[in-house]
Length: 417
Image (cartoon, rainbow, N blue to C red; front, side):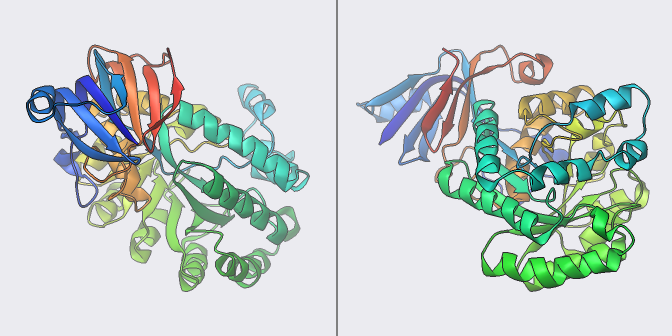
């Protein structure tokens, strides 16, 4: 099947980098005006200017999309989510408005343990149905690939249940999906005073089954004061690495936790959150191959300072943007809003934000050769906008959808017409 997109006002992201963009590279977003793009069997087979197309071709494929006045860009790559969960937690938002702290909410049965309790009472089929709807939701808003973590199970049975749901999503969804084991999200109530016992359960009871059944691509740990120390994080990650799972770390969200340093030491694919950074953490990340994934949704929802994106970029760090979609601290998978907040609150240029949410997100999932930019042979996971005046209009017009059509492997999944 061939599809031609013609008369594109601007084709954005016409690049094929071999590594994540960093420093001044992040602001470079090649584009073509008055362009065409040809899709064959779900991948980009050719692109260029309309002048080139009209000079070289005397036919049009059976399926033609007229993109007059519209931008075409790579679909978002959301490299950090927790979208398999049971139930919402809006009552905790109200508690925060009333002045309760995170610790007070947790002491009353809220927080991660609240989600774990609800998930325990939810069947695998019910979890799949709700997660499937969220996958459809984020795809309709332009997400063309996603990472999904476990971490709301906190028992052998329930962590495996989440990972099985993610595996089913991989098998049935046209979106590329990566799976991450986050059993080390917090300590379950039964191990409140026996942290060593829970760590042993992760290493001895969970990881061998996860590896044997092929349930995860990565291992993650919440490295934070009151959760898992850098030493515990390294121990758990190395156990995962023994079973073939590559590490990615929840790092430096609430405190200078040492998560960045341990992530770089382990060669982690990414260290994520980074709300709390100092010169040492920034320098360590800048001189590594590890990607710093910024999650402005969580900072916004928790009323925390946003990540120091400008300092990270100017220091030469490779940064990605992701949604952190979860019921407790980021109940939205809208990557368009993420891009807007990155520009408005974190002072990223529109070009930097788009690159961070596409090509660098793809590298954060080890899909840089397949996704995240406009290049021959890459998957045709694309956003076609409504008629818009400029690239900057995307972050500028927060709260309004600029998307007309989303293509996943060349097939439209939604249209605003």
